[in-house]
Length: 115
Image (cartoon, rainbow, N blue to C red; front, side, top):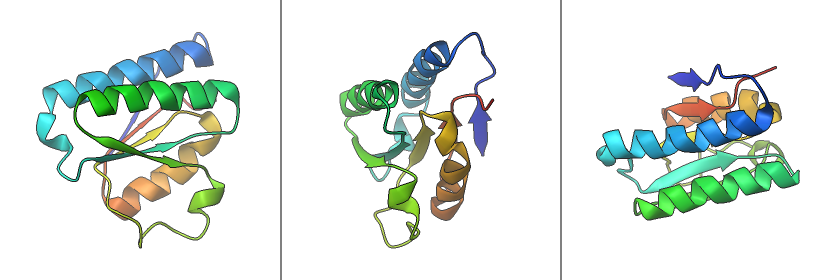
């Protein structure tokens, strides 16, 4: 399942909405963190790292941990990595990889709106 945010005024607004969506999802589905891990796919830019940090704070507040990923770190596949409960793509450039990762782990995906 992929949930793409459709709010498009700016990428910064999309990232803020994404963090709010993660918070909301963890509140309404507290059992979502069965394995306790959320994978965050990000770019190397400052805004991606800041969004990752914001998602990390939310996840930790709910007792979970974050697996920090980039497109390059997923190149060899993720099937041998720990199973995650949710995949979050904080950069538009990572959405396609995040979809593949989410399918591999059979996890829901939250992503910023693509261009």
